[in-house]
Length: 247
Image 1 (cartoon, rainbow, N blue to C red):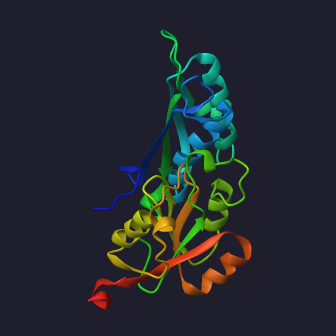
Image 2: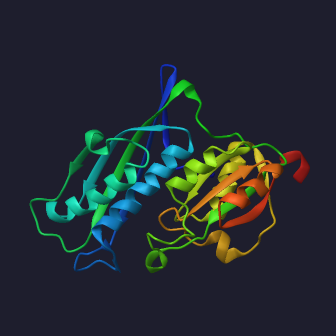
């Protein structure tokens, strides 16, 4: 069973959406496996959860940061979180609660984030795809030392928000550790469709995309060329078909 990385709870005529992410052993601490500046850790930590939130049509209303490092390093991570969150909210500091480790010394970075958002009118953007829509990956799957904040191949919040404006774009799913194929199949399942795969590069489809360096989305065929003229890199994965067509 394929599933999305969010929790949606009805609240009257609206929907509360909760997303989360974590990072471990990546940072500036003594025992971190992947070296990275704390601010960069914060940017990617926030990006993953925010992309999931924004991709389904929610607006950010609250952030919870749980950092298993000392307050000094936590403050640097938090600066990165705020820098990323400012792309979707005018005052992230005013909607954030933070906890850090103050009792024992830590030698390895551990950080988590929870995002809370609201979708007005129960209009969660999922299950929108139809038979004949194409499935596309934006970005390249990268993980660990391959990941860079300045990499132009990364999917990010700005590209996501641009994609949401384009008519004919339907479901959008950030791809992370589960890989591109998993998320493409999740999109198909949410619309009761089957994925007919055209790109069969296993390394591309199954490789971890780390901190959401890829977005998988569906669109009508006519829209694909418009997107390709404005947003790159794109890789066509396949086409959605009804279950009856596959049989």
